[in-house]
Length: 346
Image (cartoon, rainbow, N blue to C red):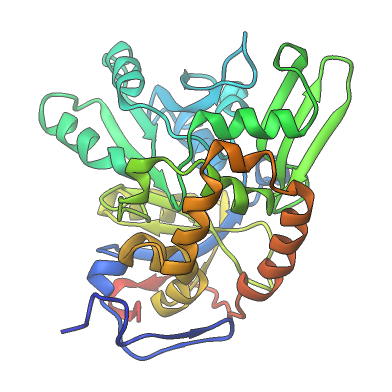
């Protein structure tokens, strides 16, 4: 029996992870585990990491497997405001592509699912809603054909977006476009003004913002890898392969869909061992599954105070975060050519 306190059974550094761990607790059940990316260059670029989510949406609609795909896009009237949207046309997939780093309320998702109840549907949602939508399937929403989720480390409040917009020196009414993962991989926060000016911060900006605006309920949530979804996607932090996704099929339906897409040359997939996944995402797994450590929690308690936020040197913190990420983020993996069977996952 593995110890779940986080104090035994683990040894971690950037290049190594050894000894035992509780697979069922950290990772949960799945049928297929891969690293992959879209073979369509435009879709790969459109997505946050590898474009696999974008490719799945396109494949489902193009082949009429579903009639509508629900995901998170930006409001047309307020392009800085994320909202759930339903798309029925392949040309509109870009509207819901890319990560949206803000907590979304379940009620608005439920209302949209209700509106689309007469259509066969695929739903992209955060891990904490998977169980609720599974229950909806059991209670008559048989039109929901696929539940697709993603890795969720720090879920932040809308105030975080307000903070980044302010740091960009842009007024909300002058925003023409906004993105949380924009530009060359791994991307970063971006606002484009109506007169064409672009202001962006690298992805490292979120390390401080995550601690400043961490939602209280999300701090206590142990869900990380879309437990219970058909397919789960996350960043593949591999040194030799940039702009790629972890692709985890947790159900037979999810595995069948991914395999069909690979056969039809929609995605490129490489096998990866579960232990490599744990190494790659240990910094977030440790926090989500065993709680925030003393030092990190101390920083969080300090920077979450509104009076402190204006005193924090924003760009200096980004510089320090970028240097830290060079050390902590990214592992070396010898990628195989075929996805691993569940029996080979360790």
